[in-house]
Image (cartoon, rainbow over all chains, first blue to last red; front, side, top):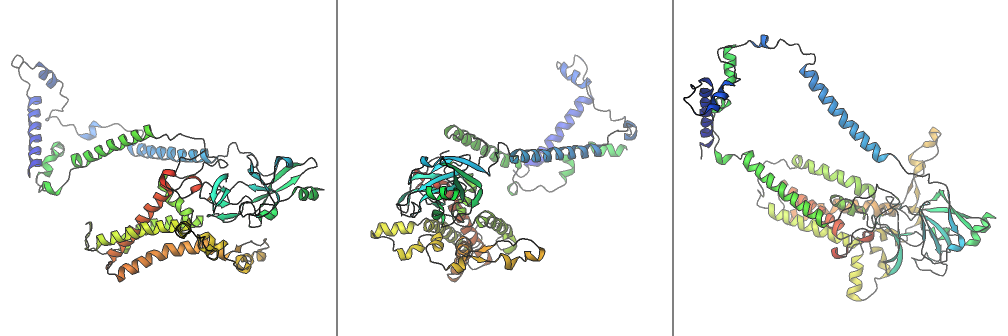
Length: 244
Length: 292
Ligand code: FES
């Protein structure tokens, strides 16, 4: 066991010597049936030991590209291609595409579309939830008696996920909350934060109505969310009066 | 020249021949000792991956779209520990500060614990195993209890056990956020304007920076989580020291390290298996794949 490696080394040496002999001395034809061995030995490319060519004579070629230049070039090419690849992928991921201008007025239907106390309605292009708070619902989840229309920005004030309305979600014994799918921030129907890591309540947009009762949400006018969200809700009378 | 070319032709084995051979029992060969094991591991890994990919569907989806959030929205599993932290504290702490400090502390271990006792040996100190066990136990279950508290499970337990309502005077103990929302903090400490005092922008003719300090919010989002994360390990170390479980630097290192690893594990388990729709805490069998 101890001498395993040594044995192997000696064996290798022995093989080398055997090979030398075979190549060096070609057996006479007819003596051996192994004609292929002759053929092999005649093809030997080994330089005969007695001829020694000085290396200076053997390599008199002047290279146009030195080895150093070649290695350097290879390195910088590889490096550059890699960096370019990173930059390209970065740009590809971060290049805004299919982005429509967001801030501005958006039509969000007619005032008659929203019944008091009905589930919030989402407008994708405006990123808005339109809520119609029922003044008779004084529970915390129902908006604490705020009355009228409220435009909530769907973007969670925590890390920006789109917050869905979940009518069947039970929290604190009540059903129907805005619940963020990313870190669980929970908001009442009026967007008031009751639980979770969100730093404030859901932000609201300004709402306006024209003579025909068509609603417009102004997504360029964001009001940071707070506990007074329900009070920001406007009844139909409020909106029409302010417009008049 | 002749001698030079001759020395080049010498077999390498001759050059090593004079050396004292190492004893076979003292060395491991790359082949077969290492490569064989690596090969078997690679085969097993590929097999597992193939079977998993046949059994579990993981479709490629569209490019990320911020206005389309699957429910629940989860990071890759190895980041779910951090996402679990995000449920409980300010995002800058959970997402930036904690990972930075954790990685820094891990790198600092060899500098903090520079004793040479038991070098290169597992469980070298007689108290190593007990310290690892205590640290892992406290880290794992301590984290679990903290998560349960922030999900108001103590309220649920109280109401189940006594069939009473949770006293409304104790509403502020329902979870950490309730400390901010259920206590009538005076308005004066809820919005302290420090923008003008801190940055004298008017001297440069610039508009004032609006910076409002909300003490209860600061308390809930930053001070309480930070104190918990720094204070509990200190208490653990002090108690272990008083009970003579930890005595040397190495003992403390093992204690805190295993507590940290167990905490990380618990956070990963919770974020992966115990969070369902709306990142709600639930039993693993109730956790469904995300609804897109
Ligand atoms: S993004 Fe909504 S809770 Fe984190």
